[in-house]
Amino acid sequence: MLLTCRRALMAMTLAALAFVFLYGSLGVYRPMEQWSWMDIVGEGGTALMSGFWAILILGSRPSGRVTLLLAGGLTAIMLGSWVDCLDEFFVIPKDQFWDNWLESLLTPGGMLILTSGLYFWRQEQWSLNEHMQKRERLFREHRAFDRVTQLANADYLRRQLQLEQERHPGSGALILLDLDQFHRVNREHGQQEGNRLLQAIAHLLLLNLRPEDLLCRYAGDRYAILLPESDLQEAAVWARHMQQSVAQLAHHTRSGIRLPITARVSWGSLEEAPEALLNRLDQALEAAPDFLPTHAALA
Image (cartoon, rainbow, N blue to C red; front, side, top):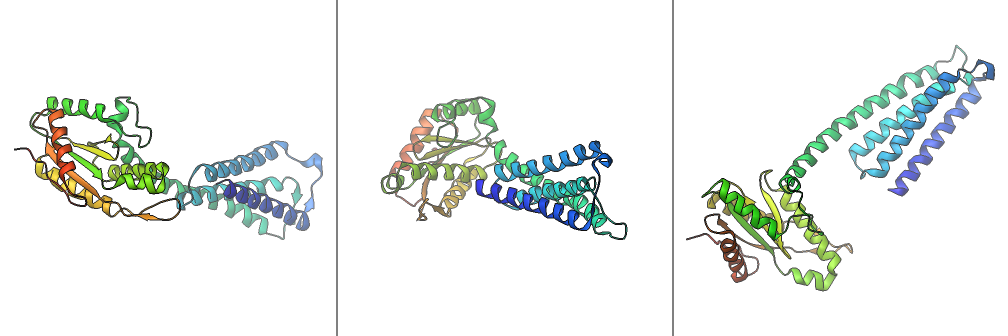
């Protein structure tokens, strides 16, 4: 990002200097006593602030369409304001119209580009808000996050299971998902790569969940998914869907090696005490072979 900012700042500076050269070579220098300091401060300040905002956007956002439109629109507005400011220093002959075209195109064009960027930014924010809404249940309780995945822990899950049973007796389901051979990732590629994988799985699962569902890091490489007001059949569908999503994840290490990821799943309804349910699902996962789903439905 730092390199991108430097290139953008250099491009803006060169463009501003090019306009100074253009006005200086084709226009007539205006005496200082004819300068309008109010216009110079206003138009020059607008140019500086627009350029500063463009650099801030480039330095704080990942590259992409939205970033390009926002920064590009602000840059065009900067150059349009700079052209207006140069009119205070140089007089362009009346038989030349290129300066009028510059003033008429740069600022309105920049505003149009900026508006397009804001529109796509709004769509981006809707998607991010939906993603964050799936964490709202955790934020609302002001619980400490797991350092690696930013998910709640097993203690928080147990409390939520108890609350769900009190609010909606006889409904709801729980899924446990366990990564296969995760210890090999830590052993062969290091704990940092293992943490990156855990983060990737957490984001993947969140993107596949409903806003009312709750995702927790239950233990190590094991995740728990609470499905409020869902029955056993719905839990089975969701569990298989999560398992397939994990298997399709194209996760690469920092050195470019793709790691094949699979997971085992177990699921059950909230018809028994939370600890008994968790023990049942844990045992089902431990007994299941790698790469195969398992069903831990209650009798």
